[in-house]
Image 1 (tube, helix red, strand yellow):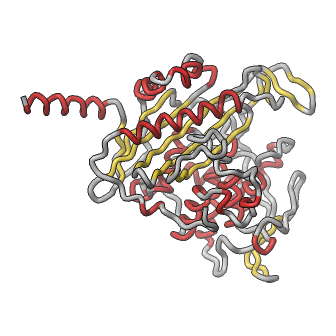
Image 2 (cartoon, helix red, strand yellow):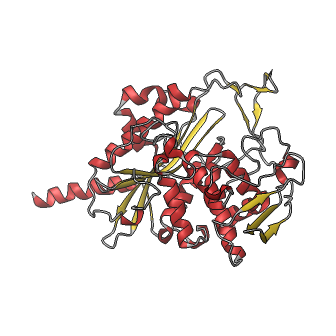
Image 3 (cartoon, helix red, strand yellow):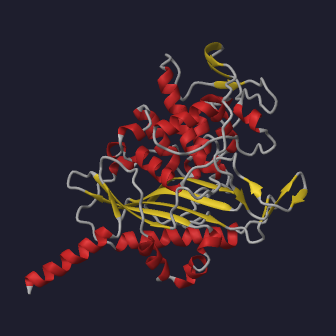
Length: 427
């Protein structure tokens, strides 16, 4: 009888393991392929998911869920499950490209190795070409001047576009893409954000950057100019779009727009969170305090933030830049939960790439998802179905995986103290 029970248990475990790809702790850059597991979970909640799974192709859904189990020494082991994951299928990544740009800016600053140059050093942008913007101050920052630290805060807390554009100038288009390729990420960053009128030639050129201490020049960088980027595959989306107030009745060309696959997004998050479980070649060379700052800003609530003074603005509630679990709504994130993530939203696409931790219930998991919601098929008309489709999907998906994680057995209770951080203000 006992042997029979053990045999059944062993068979059940082997089936579970065969349904997922288990990542060894030496790396995370493997392809997860298993549509059935996530599909079955969604199918168990037809009221919330049937309309999405029935039209998954139209919604262009991709999901990557990675469960984390800890060894007795607390080392993470990853098992990934996917739904319609395809690294070659294009979606517009929107603000998710800000995540690698923050890491690349901090890595570059570290690589320069200049005494006195750190993430708190004031910087200025000059204008040396058409389409460039001169920036010398930031009224939302402590001291009224922009710094890499303050730009990173604004990027993770409220997804500020001009903060990204400033880091884009510092890192440079060509160096950013070359660095990502060297690390094995196939991301493509070709343009600034919310500056749609710029040409490819203007986006290849970046503003001159100056770092200074008090009134003394510390380091300067002239305008950088990237080589033109060849297009190997044309990409078109939708059936029409508005340009300069006029409806163009043909698909919009995304061939020269940014690209960042969902798999690379989650791999990059793993590289930041668990460097010990990531191949060295895919890591970012950050100072320990810089890495900790990124983790802080990723998980900090706006109500805990003094600079910028988001704590004074109810618009920036705790669900503002947290789509999974909350759907971007206030008061929907469970007590004890922190979300380390980067969201994006534009051209009908909504994306969230998140590591979700519940310190009270001792659970952790990674969840990344993208959905396209644009029923009329027209871009740039500000008539996307974010509130009726995208946000409910993200909220329900986060809850589905969160509830699954709360119910599943763990042989080892994880030690999550590495992610219990200090924040500017008490929540």
